[in-house]
Length: 257
Image 1 (cartoon, rainbow, N blue to C red):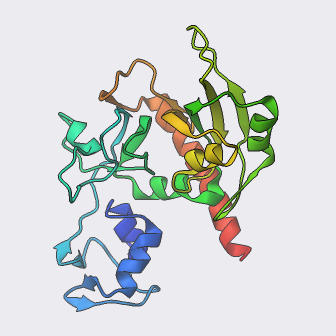
Image 2 (image 1 turned 60 degrees about the vertical axis):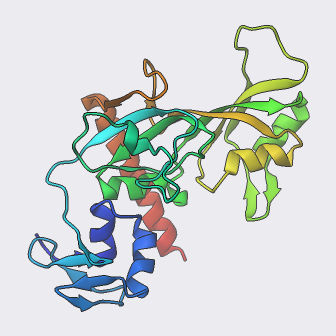
């Protein structure tokens, strides 16, 4: 295998994202053949060099794995938790591959989560410039007006900049309508922390429940909370096409800076 940048190798191994890998390198937490490397342009051949992060040797997976899970509320979206809470990896019974979550869902949120050991695909799908769509269904406190819902699409000012939904609509769950809350679905293409919660709070209707229904071309049809399954061939083919497009958008945004 040819040499590649260390941050790409670390991300491909599923340790962390490429951006966070850069932080590990500049912090002096990465060694190549026993020597600390702090230069972001440094390269190595992962097949011949011993690359360590915090003293632990990394190894690229020999085969890619792609799994979706219907995350239940209460599980945290991390590989390990310092407070010994249940993680999404604890739910992957029968999965031998070392996978990691693509993006995250809050502990109290539920719904579709993709896990993989394909670092390049994960990096492309989660970069903000990639504009990969995510559909959420959320229960709001109070009854928002049509004007309030339109504001989510026009854009709301948050502390880290303007945020807007690509699409918003009310959801009829076939039950007796409540006078005190409402269900809506909205599509966003960003991955900022607590984005949907902050957007809804900005229009005066805090989120009571949050469920991710779709990510890219994926849905969780047939999966009960806590259940998981591998991606089918057609799903994976379409997901890779979306990742390639997202990767090109990401690279174009970097060149434009």
